[in-house]
Image (cartoon, rainbow, N blue to C red; front, side, top):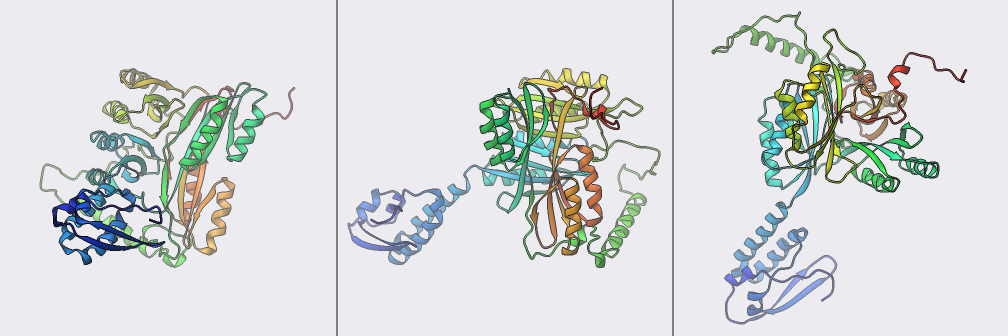
Length: 499
């Protein structure tokens, strides 16, 4: 029989087939060739279908041919075909889920708990800060049916705005990794050559180590790690994957959802109406009684607080009058289901806010590195570290705030532009060394790496054009082996030659 496609008939056909031996011919048409089978009914009773799950759609076309020739076997064949289709749907697949949430303490713990209670191990999680809301990018493996139930549970959380599974849609995906390598004079040149091939950037160098920054899709990150492993990886900080949908060419942009200065005809029309409706709803909610034990309360402008998900708050080298500042933690934990929920649970139960969170594989197989930023006083942070040490799956926790360290974040930002304003947006991106990773008729998606202040600065420059979506990884950090703390060099002129 020509071709690689091999088919036998399901043993379930025997339930409907006659026991009388009968010889028949069945002609099955496939794209490359026509296959002709000659079998008896007794042979059909003991034969079995050897078919890959990916060939399930072909089985449906085969069954239609058999229905015409042998209607008595049709019900059994359809039942078997449906069983194969259900098996293909029950396969474990990797899913990329986007969760848009509002600003609320403990929201990270609740989202991680939804997966942990169902026994799912989150492969990567990235959450960035974007004013009063954030976008979680979660990568988890599971079946279609169970993941659909997880999405439904996430939608029930109060401050969750939207949940999307974009695994089957065209999307831009990126990761960031900081790799600290062992170097010597003999291997430094080869490492620099490989770094240039993968378009990596050197962020720190010393006599015996070199730290590089690499961005790209997950496949590229894995290849970089494989090539650098032979030199000896001392430390590795890897963010989770972030993703944004690719805009289709020719699609109509949802301009009513954001301010777009590059479309002056729309300016002042839709947003004045939406702002008026918002003000009316706020005023009506304040004046109307809820009918229960909740009463309206006057707003106090004197009361201020630090938002958890605020892109412009939490600079590390600044302290307020109360002594609260951002502390950067590096944790090594076992890569097991529920460990992220345990870590975030310890933090949230004691009233701490997580300002930034990045989870990814560490340099040791089976170990994950969690990089998180938590605001608090030095005294309260010491107590938190003592509580974290009680977690069984925790190997190491280090507060690197007062140490010189290299920090990086990754951001994907989608901007609304028409062809006339596209050049201006690309010029701004060039100043920040951002790269365009997707372009459509009405949007541009940019990729940017840097620290928190650089992310916020680019966002402010692009706001007049209209920001559609923002995905950020959170901060990853590794201690500088060189011992150079760049924060002390800001604002000072460096000498060109030694005295």
